[in-house]
Length: 199
Length: 199
Image (cartoon, rainbow over all chains, first blue to last red; front, side, top):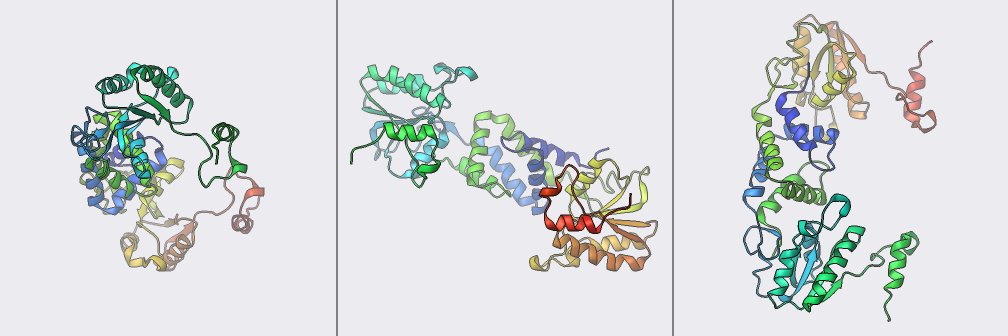
């Protein structure tokens, strides 16, 4: 006989399917919501229900958006000859938060990874090529993650975008600002040496 | 101008109100659900909506339950003269999982804490006293947390339950099984010395 009511165990299970949330955290969240009253649980429930129904993919940049085309793609004030290619929608936010980039974006929704059987066809690369063939774009900034998969994706993109007559660049690798040379890992330090700039 | 669609930021905000979930985790969870498809988000949404509508407080033990009285309280096979007093519904689960306790429970829904302005009247202590006055209970096992607040609650309960003619006991304090004496904290080690048992 279980001491857990079914609605409680059902929610614990649903929370537990989220990444990084184990059974203990799932229980804690559930009992927090039980204690905190109806409103919090219902607000979260409603937000979840509207998540997919209220969003679409932007047909230009493939980012998740409320409108198609998205707010960035339809903003005439942005530098429309630059496209920053990222792996995920969250990466767009990260770059927007820097406040220094005023160009457009393209979201691949993943990276090339033979291990996970993700090839170029599984990503939104076709859409990117079509966009560039459409004209008006002079620079593509590849902002994939500084990982093996991000590197592979960047190399592949450089290979197919170069012949289209656009400049392809990639985010600089090096020491993170505020970091400590002493604690930097070997690879990062080597990258920052290789990428050293004349003062 | 924000690059985040409103349904997305609404869900990030709702996730962020949960304990232990900061803005970064809230975004990661939201974008995970965006990627993983409609079903997961809707299942979680539904479970949340049913959380409060599908549960009641057991009028006997004050635990959260599907039925009133709850499955434990209405189980005639349990030892009905023992009541284990815990702070939270999750504590009932923890004790049930040991498989060694066959008595009943009473959930206080908190602990005495003058700092948080929680006195005995904010807890389900009145209900417990009434239950004991009703008769049939010979032992009350106070299983509040081994913290300052848990101690204060246990002392208070011992004071008011003793005169009612029931035996009041408390969970043993000592070294956790599998722990290492060398790494035990001073207080725990002192408790385990004070509570030493003749072999």
